[in-house]
Amino acid sequence: PFCYNYTLRGDSIEIWQPQFTYYGFRYVEVKGAVPAGERNPRNLPVITELVGLHTSLSASQSGTFFCSNPLFNKIHNLIDWAMRSNMASVLTDCPHREKLGWVEQAYLMQYSLQYRYNMSRMYNKIIKDMYLSQTEQGMIPSIAPEYVRFKDGFEDTPEWGSAFIISSWYTYLWYGDDRSLKKYYPMMKKYMDYLASRANDNIIAYGLGDWFDIGPDVPGNSQLTSNGLTATATYYYNATIMQKIAHLLAQPDDVEKYGRLAVEIKESFNHSFFNSSTNTYDRNSQTANSIVLFMGLADETYKQSIINNLVCDIEKRNYSLTAGDIGYRYVLQALETNGLSELIYKMNCKYNVPGYGWQLAHGATALTESWQAFGFVSNNHFMLGHLMEWLYGGIGGIRQTEQSLAYKTIQIDPHVVGNITSASASYESPYGRICSEWKKKQEGFELKVSIPANSEAVILLPTRNIENITDYGVCLHLSKDIVFLGVESNKTKIKIGSGNYLFFVKN
Image (cartoon, rainbow, N blue to C red; front, side, top):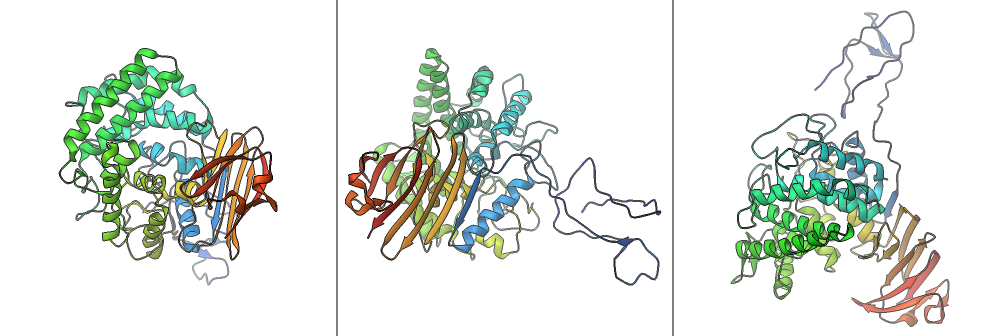
């Protein structure tokens, strides 16, 4: 615990608060004074009022979420408190202890953060911090600014330093801001050269790995997944992004260079980590299977086997998770993009296994550093808050299409799962406010949508028959302004322009 000592002037009512620092806390103890109205035989100072001031970055709120399941609303609040508590001049790991900008959070939690807050200004600053912290050799340290240097894998880990490339790209996709890409592209190339210097036949195998996964030991370094798998997969992901950046910046030689590198890394990765006799990667962990699926590292022939391996591991553990800081976002993304949001619901709707519900059941008021809510680690950490992205993009259904930039073309595809009967989500995009609100009714499914001006949206509705759909009571097939795009995954796919819509799908 930390403490302040304050000496009163003693002549009148005094107001005091820390001026040049802040600390995260849950409980406050005051010694040497008594509350107003209490007995005071020693004539001690009297506390007339005690107020906790929550400090945070001035980023405005950009998203809202609510659904009919109270647990998911509590999880949203749990993650949000940890986000706000750790948004200072850097994205800190905890507000009470180190207050350091561990950069893996920057990209793994980036979409979650950006759904909830306008982070456009902050990410330019975070990326600049990484640039200023880059060493002469090209290494991006695991914390930026690098106020202190750690050893034993904490100073340099590929899954951390790669935030320099990945966050720059995500910021461009989300806000259409290419300034970091243009300004720091040479330094990104330098970081890729550094990673290449640490590779052995394109395999990088050092660092912390899937930090704080759930294994047989106390959480810390990765227990269930080889460091080489997550580090090399991230190296591959960097190469695919660098190819896209090179194309954007009209660097044809680099487009070829990074395209070729990605192919070479993929070949080495599969040679090193894939067992073709069992169709498994590494030790068949949730993280290993998910990162392979998310990054497209598996041969298409084996993709369904990898999905089955992931599902099987989750089911045999009674729908509990094992992935840590690096892996859990990829677990959620792999499941969601392969039509398995029902499994995400089953993993996160319970209180009796380590996870969000477990943390709430054990008294957490902000997201904790460990899934198990251990008291000996931080109890205000946002690094495991990846479910926030799914609450908005899965349950709420708000995403942008694959070819879209800055939410020019929105995708609304609510995932109706579990016992959830209604949900609403909104996001203040660069073009304006996007709203998605749905309800399950006895006679069908209702979806209310608001699309901002100068943008358009692709909507997916749960029926194969367009004649079952109306917009404000008008049959969809009679509308001239709505474009029918076909049927995908048993859903009718349509394209609409800006405006307000009220779709209803009859049972």
